[in-house]
Image (cartoon, rainbow, N blue to C red; front, side):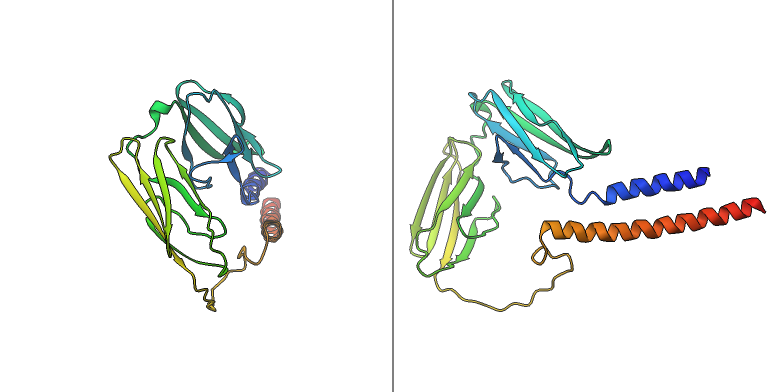
Length: 245
């Protein structure tokens, strides 16, 4: 009987962790996205705010059966403030993220000339701060006015955006004027359509939305759970018969 209880306990633990399809799905501050954007694999985020910022609100979203702690309104002292965002399912800690929030203009890096983020409305350039060359093809021939959006880690950095012919240049100068970076985006104005065969998996998110994916995964997990339950039951029956003999 003890063997059966231990087996069921292990099975239940396995089931709880397997059914956790997604833990914390997003973390934001004052309803604004983190820089860089939130990723489940990134556990620590460094955020800088102005000296005038005394209170922030940490927001987080997750699954319906998930308890998230560490969110809400937070008072900031001058300098470094550390906050932990934890996720629990059935009282079991599943995820933990750390926000290092530094208050004060004096803490901004005055030497950096790297952008935190760069995007062009309607186009995906897969931005990385250490990649300075990008290329896009216009969706429409008449799409001539492109909106360039950028984010800086230091509000005192100098950023200049210029468009000349088929090239957009974003010149970034550090606060101390000692460092300079230039990001370039080449514009292809002739739209070409190429047919490409891509290998896709059964769980390709291009074919299924998040809800459908969850239903499929839960169905598979349920089948595995039933099969394992049957196996444990057969083992228990066999054990009981041996004991009777």
